[in-house]
Image (cartoon, rainbow, N blue to C red; front, side, top):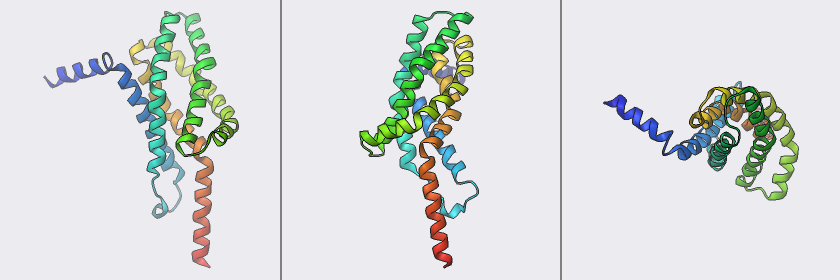
Length: 199
């Protein structure tokens, strides 16, 4: 009985409510990726000085919610335009993904995060210019092999969730690149505080 209910719930999540499932999954995994990054950032430091940045994780979640529907519709569109799992078709999908989706999502992430932090467009564009190439190059290292598995083996309804789980590692890297300057500033401030206490 319980197994049947679970099966029906999963069927609905990956059928009738697929858009909602994909959207919430994108937001949730970006938030988890940030949580992992925050923990790693504070390894080797005094745990008493560690204060988890919930607003930062909230911003990551919000950007993920915004990106989720675009991801959902992109893969649906791609499967309709390029049908099948033949090698050449998969290669075309990967090229399309890297040429269209990757730049769009890198830009959306960086600009969206900057705006949610209360920065203006000028600062957001400046950060985009500074960090876009790093993120895009990393994208090429991680996503083409992952997308080969995605396009070659998986049915459409599981694509966004699969991508999101690969994204868990990717999101942790994104969070690190996005926040590394702030993380270093925070560590420097803590060091200065310790020096002042000792003097």
